[in-house]
Length: 258
Length: 258
Image (cartoon, rainbow over all chains, first blue to last red; front, top):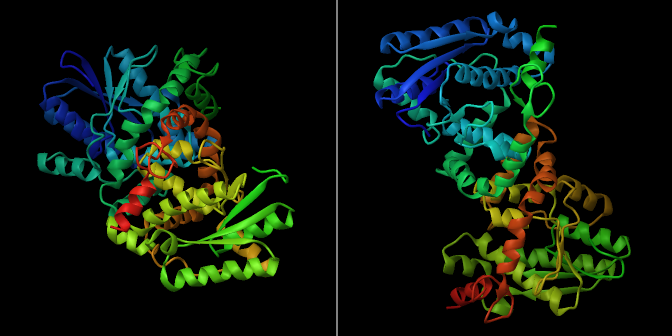
């Protein structure tokens, strides 16, 4: 996923997974800076930033803070209202775009995120329920560097969310325990519940679902992934990789600030 | 799926789906005979055969009756004990083998089964949870005729099980309402429940899951299906298609009658 000689940017939300990841990478001697993206979700954003900053302070680690409302003129709740879609949609899109941009601008080799097994299995479940074949082909623990994209890695995919929480407790890392208030009842959380119910009846089912996907299905999707990569051009507004003339993030900015 | 000039063999269990299918095909003027496979599951098998025979009598339609214990010397419960596996495993294997054999022996062009949307979605769900890529590649509403296999079609895949039950009620067709006693609590039924819970929260999710698979994913699996077809040889004991020297059904017969 990364070498000790490389510069790693860790996406920090202030939650257990991202702080555990940062902690592990620092302990292992990686050159790992953090980046926090403020999404303008009231107290929740203020609190989560404060956990991120506290951890950075304790470790003497560098944390870059980006703020969506300050920099782009809209918050995630604004974007949800403007697009009439669930907030998680604008949030995910903004994170992907701005964190990648931060990695490129800062000259980092790798962008690392704290996605755990529960997260990845739930995303996979959602992609499967609607057979988003293109998304399935891209759901990899390592997405290699391509034009306009830093390498993206998910080192914690073998840990459950209980394990990353236990890690933080054992290491005395304070993290924001609340779920994002905008995510309550969203599809991703429901898929997590469904997978937890299946796991309770058939222990090991969740790991089998995700790891068998990596082993058995991803190789079959190699051609789909290659075809998708070929279609990627450049956004005429911001220069980011995009399969359309104007990338999804620029369209979001336009609608949310109209 | 079939032409009016073709001879169709309908696999009849005595349940709502297979009797609805037979009824529809006869009403549409197809040359459709039935085949009932007795699995030696006590009263359940006796009752289900009697529903099949009653329907055939009312319609004046031809019903062939095959009996697993009489013909092969073992019942599904025997096979489950001998193999130490769930009974549904030996049952499915026996059905696939013997119903195909009946279609070939009787000179039928097509073997039709009553699988509905709920069945197919649950099978798909099971295949996805463990990423059985080979099974996924074969999960098609129409499997064309190949050496040793009659064409197999599932005309009711667009109907829910409530719809086929409603059809039987409206047409006055008596069918066995009880679920198979050996299937109680099996994985397939649990997957049906899980899909029903998802459907309740997101109406249309079940149909999207199955039909998007047919539209989006099956084309990607075409190469896998072709590779699987190439590996099929012939069972040295019974001559049926098999990727091993001795086919799974002959191995089952050997263990269950040892």
